[in-house]
Image 1: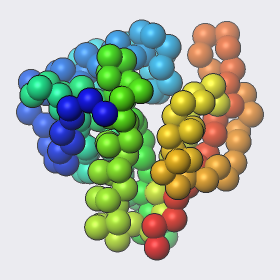
Image 2: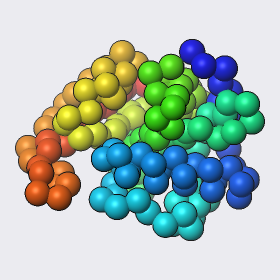
Image 3: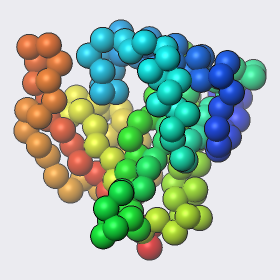
Image 4: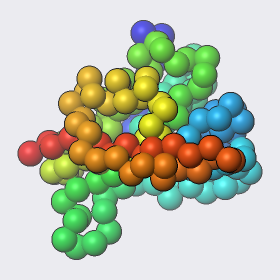
Length: 164
């Protein structure tokens, strides 16, 4: 694994801007992060500021990736949370950074008393699916041709990991 430190908590404005750059680079390369076009930096900075449980990976003091989860809002679902985003700089992919960020998120969820962590991903993201499965997530559903990217359609894969 790359020399990486993962920290939980809020990030500085400087680090948020760096992470916005990671998101923009990933989306420009076709990553499935919820945007079709690279989002404006202020939009990503605002998104990160509103996250309760954020794990950020740093290498040499530079923010290189992040992931976060949010509790479900409905009272009947509040014991569970959804991992909404995992974004790692392309320069650091395949080096264990995603695993380190996910492991920090899982540990934080266990500490918070979360019973089930869910996540979803685009069906063509086989590397992410393999990572999630190796961390104990199990696929529980598929929404066929649910994700639109230009003229292309992809399945949306639904995963969950029971922590209780």
